[in-house]
Image (cartoon, rainbow, N blue to C red):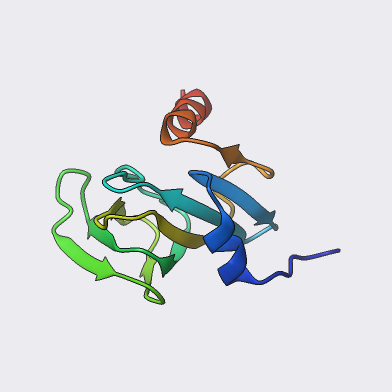
Amino acid sequence: MLGWSANIEEATIDNDTFRTVLFTGQTVQLTVMSLQPGEEIGVEVHPKLDQFIRVESGRAEVRMGKAEDDLSETQELSDDWAVIIPGGTWHNVVNCGDSALKLYSVYARPEHPDGTVHQTKAEADAAEAAHDG
């Protein structure tokens, strides 16, 4: 298939990895994520891309700001809620519920290598450190 087609809700709910890339195009990337209670993506910024996040199951707190040490805007998300994070905005997503947070993310420019699967947050951090370092 040239593109990607599937039931996105099912793919997101069924995902048990911290992050799995489902599709990478020239200007867009689709990932699914599963965060355990209290787990977070980690404070990050994507200078040259926008990000769309939709929660399929669970509760999330999305923190955003203009600086890494000032994430003063907070949005609470639950089932069927979404947020758009503009490029250059520092942000973090935290699972603030008591069950797994299941979400998908669309990057408007790919962010992770095609085919990426991170079973855990620790694995994701190690891969990103190796990539950035």
